Image (cartoon, rainbow, N blue to C red; front, side, top):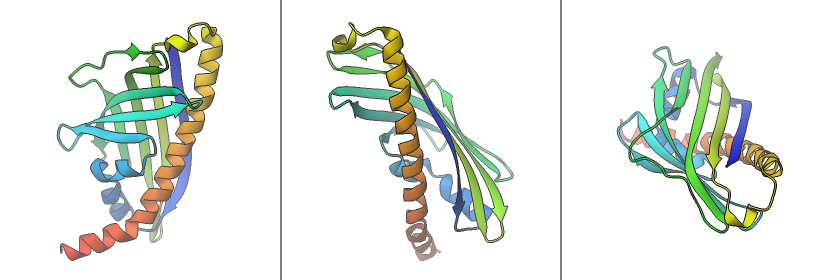
Length: 183
């Protein structure tokens, strides 16, 4: 098994007050579009989601990690978490010649800190999984594979977090316009 683990913490300013920022980020169906390499597979209700992390690494290795998460809302609007859970159906681990897939664990935490008319968001993102080794990599020592996987995953997690921040902040004015049309 290859151990996949990556995490990052970033801080950014969001151009709205704390309550507005919190409401904006509550909608996982909308905000997942800003997470590069991650897509929504299903939503059981407003709190439970199955996400897929998919990427092609080193130009040939197809990786797919399915992650079940629960949205945990803070009553004060200070903290929004997406925590790992295990939903049905189960996610079997599979590998092919140049592919690997299985269940993983996605976790994110966003702390909303008021700063005048803006909000500073402390954003933490983590992804982990144990994936079966693709057949084409069986000859490579597992310690070397794990080191390569960790380096690649950390890079991808930073790419995901950076893309999420950039995309979600850029989309905010459009969300405000749409929200005001429905009032």
